[in-house]
Length: 309
Image 1 (cartoon, helix red, strand yellow):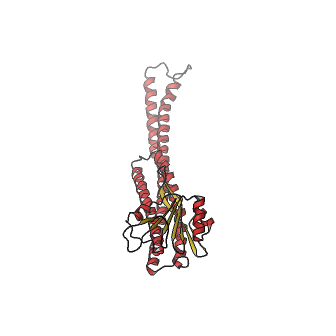
Image 2 (cartoon, rainbow, N blue to C red; image 1 turned 90 degrees about the horizontal axis):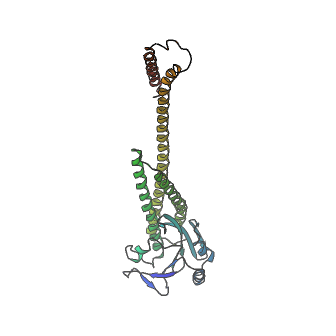
C-alpha cells in the first residue's frame, strides 16, 4: 500500500493526494514487489535498499546512493498478540520527496494525519526528524511502562508474594528491553552521522533537534540497562531468600527428627527381648522418660549455642 500525503506551511491539515508532487510524503506500508519497483523507477532509487526495509531483522544504518539518502531505524509497536515488538523503518530522502517504507503501520502516523503534530511535508528534513522524534518518544513510553511493572513486582518481593508467573513476565520484559537496546544503540550511530549534514541538508534548528534526539536516545538506553539490572537483582534476591528459607526448613525438619529419635533410642532399648538392668522395676519407666527429656534438652541447648536452630 502506497499513499501520498501533502501539507505546506500555509495549509491547516494534511491532504491525501491521488498523485505525488514536489514536497510530498510518500508513505509505503507493507508494499508489494511491484510497488517497490515502481518507487525505484519513479524516483531513481536503489531497489535493494527498498527491499531491505521489509526484512524483519534489518538494523539501523545510513546509506548514500546517488542523490538519495537511505536511513534505516527501528520503531516499537504492539503486534497482533498484544506484545511489544520492533520493526524496521526506512526513510528515503530523495530529491523532491521523503519516502517512508515499513512492514507495519507506523504508530505515530495518526498523530501526523490528525494535525496533533505541527509538520509540513514540504520541509523534508524537518519532517524526517519529527517522525524520528515520535519513534524515540514511543520507546520512552514503552520503557516507562516496563519500569512501572518492575517496580510493582519488586514491591511484592518484600512480602514474598512473587509467583512463578512474575518470573515468566521477567523473561518477556528482559527480551523486550534487549530488543530495544539492540535498536537504540545503532540508531545513535546513525543520528551522529546525520548530524554531520552530508546525507541530509540541515539548518541550525535541525541540528538542535538531532542533538535532542541523541540525548533522549542515550537516556532510553540507560533506562533499559537500569531495568535489566533491576530484574537481575530481583531474581538474585529471590533466589537468596528461597535458599535461606529452604535451609531454615531443613534445619527445623532435622531438629524434629532428632527430637523424635532420642526417646525412641531409650524406649526401644528397653523394649528389646533381652535382659536389661532394672527392667522389672516399676520406677524404671520414669527413669527412661527423664533421661529422654534430659537428652532432648541438652541437644536443644547445644543446637542453639551452635546456631543450628
